Amino acid sequence: MLKADAEFWWDGARRLLEDAGKDISWVTFKEAFYKKYFPLSVRESKEMEFLQLRQDRMSIAEYTEKFERLCKFSAMYKANPDEKWKCMKYQGGLRAEVLTAIAPLEIREFSSLVSKCQVIEECTKKLASERSEAFKKRQLNQESSQQPPQKKAFLGKPTGRQPQQGTDRQETPTDASPKTTELKECATCGKQHRGRCLAGQNVCFRCFQPGHIARECPAVLPPPANPPQRQGRVFALSSQEVHESEDRIEGKYTVNRIL
Image 1 (cartoon, rainbow, N blue to C red):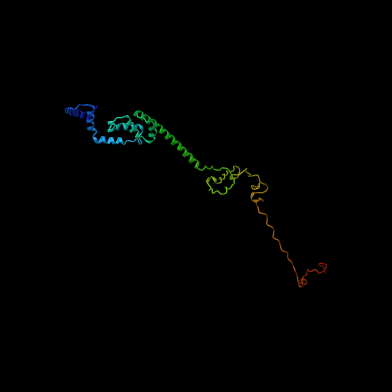
Image 2: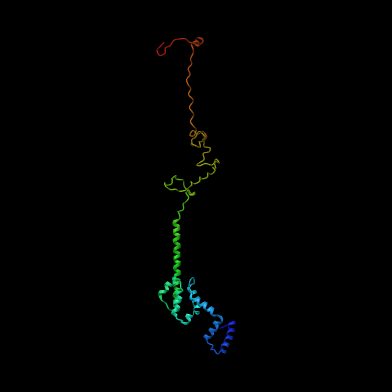
């Protein structure tokens, strides 16, 4: 049913056709309607668009809707509205992954052809999704296998082991020696030290023996130095000094049995 401008146009066009003695049929109406709203240039453009129609990125539903809309502008289809030709033209514009699956079936009924194409499209999407997920999993596995293992911080005492020969390993923060534990203040003496407090027990804080203090500990004091040796002295008197001395004692004695 025509409305507004189209209805006004058809009232005038029908009177002109009746005055010309033409029979007002559906074919006569379409010729007049296309001449008014779809001139030859537009129809030729639509026919060319139909001949070049390809699915490309469209879904099966979108491709089918556009194919049906443009098919009525095809002069070839108007001249020979054959179901076989329509199926072949529709099938020729399908994407490769759908075409390779549907072509061997040789379907020549248009509604059945469209239905099978929709099933193939859903299967293709599912297969592509599964392949994508499998590819992502393989990538994650490869990346995790290529990453070096994470080193854990060493919390115990250093063992002093040397790195194996032939390795050029740089020291990392986890290889460093652990920090010394901070000493707490003793509640007895007020100082910082390890072990039990010895304050007031009259023992050495170094060797833990009684009788002396740490700064006088014999375990750490150096040994006393040996006293210097004195050289012997020989006193000799001349004969004159002997005669002049009032304390001289005269006598004879033997030396080695000689007088």
